[in-house]
Length: 390
Image (cartoon, rainbow, N blue to C red; front, side, top):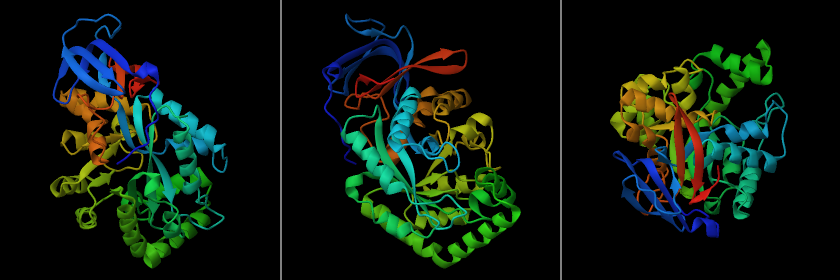
């Protein structure tokens, strides 16, 4: 995938980070990293600190985190239901927050597919916000690398027309099939859905029941057509296609038949095991892992990690937990490089971005300095292309 890269400032041309515990793809090594023109050019073993180098004094150096699925931008745009903030300010705040959390590449999740009813807040917004992100990128106003993730709501009225507003020039890197039909997948338990909608939209019992019936009717009428359109649109845009909330082995078989090779948040052990058998990468949320369970009552990320059924971790709705999740997995697996890969190399590979997510000669110099505070990883500095951004 081609990505816009602004010219590098002079400060980025040469840099040496020395005396660091460097997390390589297969081991941790004390050494120094040499950077030129925004890329890693050499890795040297040893604790020597060359003149002019930044002395890490034994701090850990990991690749910049790659975030595939985050609701964080929507939280900044609409911090309260029906309270919308100026978009540019919201995007900049989102960007700065992610940089401070060690995330150097993000796929900003934007919903396509709106519900044209006054009782919901599911209006069109994706095209406008995507344009604003791209304009900020072109102006070099963003600290980290931003790509677009379109979340395709199958049970909606305007999915196809909203997809038509995007083209290959928008660099959409990820498209997710989102089927939120009440009574299945993430919301098999209608009481969980009721709690969610009642807290977000203040639905009464009558409004909730009416919403459930309308969404089921939409799925029956247009769901299959919207699913096939999403598959076609992902191919047109050159994007990775992901499923969402697979619950059964049958769901996974259907995903595989559609050409999906990334499963966002499977809800059961059965579905995760089926993903592994089908060669589909499994992504789970950091809040689930850190909290010890799903807020929706679905399978825990920890249980999947213990069963070696976890490939990628996403911050989901709490950016600061992504790096914490990596260290929690390192404690569970006894393997820091494998754990760090779940938030760097593995998501980069799933999104077909071979130039990042790992510390190796020729890779982008997107890097994070980490110091431990007891069992908590603390981010000390962040670089994008050799330029410090956090």
